[in-house]
Length: 295
Image 1 (cartoon, rainbow, N blue to C red):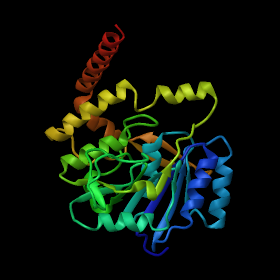
Image 2 (image 1 turned 90 degrees about the vertical axis):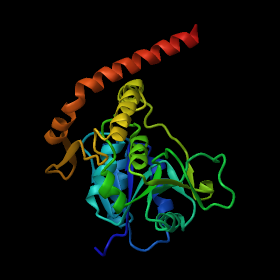
Image 3 (image 1 turned 30 degrees about the vertical axis):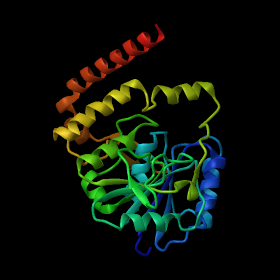
């Protein structure tokens, strides 16, 4: 394989039609040296068969299949590490690119200054207070639905944080580390011209939906964890470079399973008790606030 300039990693879990729409739109990408990596989180709706067919046709360059659903961050990190490149793009499978130059536009913005840590497209239909005439603008936090990260940023910050459950706030955690490192976090102006985001349900089975909700990184427990980590990053107690919590193991059938990295867990033990106490206080404070509002 020739040198890979951009590794575009799409993570998928069910939502087969959304995934196909995403991949088919990517076919029109006008950019040299980009590589399409797809990581599937053990879909059960026929997605895997469709993805295998696209891989056999050469539409998907690298296809990685997970034995179980470990969540977006773990899957995105698997794809990130699998294909070394100068730039990495995390792309959700319910995002559809609208223009052939969507990727070159991100690259040009990322290369415009050495302190740019990442560049992305916002997924709302519009963004308030965009500077007039600006091609891009700085934000505190960006959503990781369509985001480009230079290798230089990766060397400083490492991977997406895998502490936040299946569908979490790893993008907010990454934004915090960008800020603590003194790097710029950019959105492209007029993003709605380049991508379209259409949120789709992961699956209709109510019991399985409950399973997702219980491990959703947007829960009060994980929000509390985020604020605790935030304090550690900015105080210098926790390194800004985050390694992978779950390491991959390639099974005989070619799929990937994961196991906790003992070194990661050992490092986490330094502040495990304080984190647990902080989270408990945060959840209690949220509950008190909700009861007061209801009263």
